[in-house]
Amino acid sequence: MPINVNLDVMLAKRKVKGKHLAASVGITEQNLSLLRTGKVKGLRFSTLDKICEVLECQPGDILEYVAEVKTDM
Image (cartoon, rainbow, N blue to C red; front, side, top):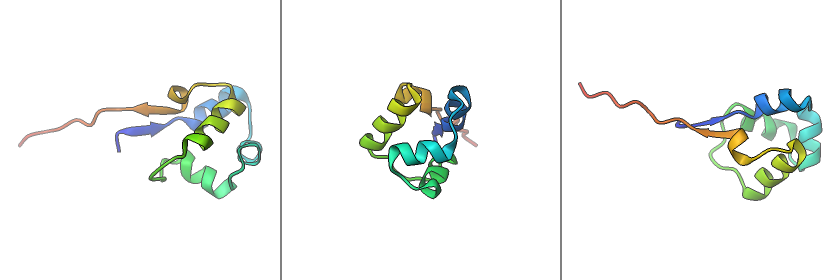
């Protein structure tokens, strides 16, 4: 998948525990774990907004686009 989720990096930078973030955002710790590992298929803007508010960051600090390398054989 060409989208990397750097949520763990922001949690470490802000010294915020996942449990606190999940409670502040209003999502389960299990859903936060899925988001942290990039195993979600979608993310609501309202959830992203709350995450950015709590972590005092921008969406680009959490989500990163990495182009896939195509090889022709």
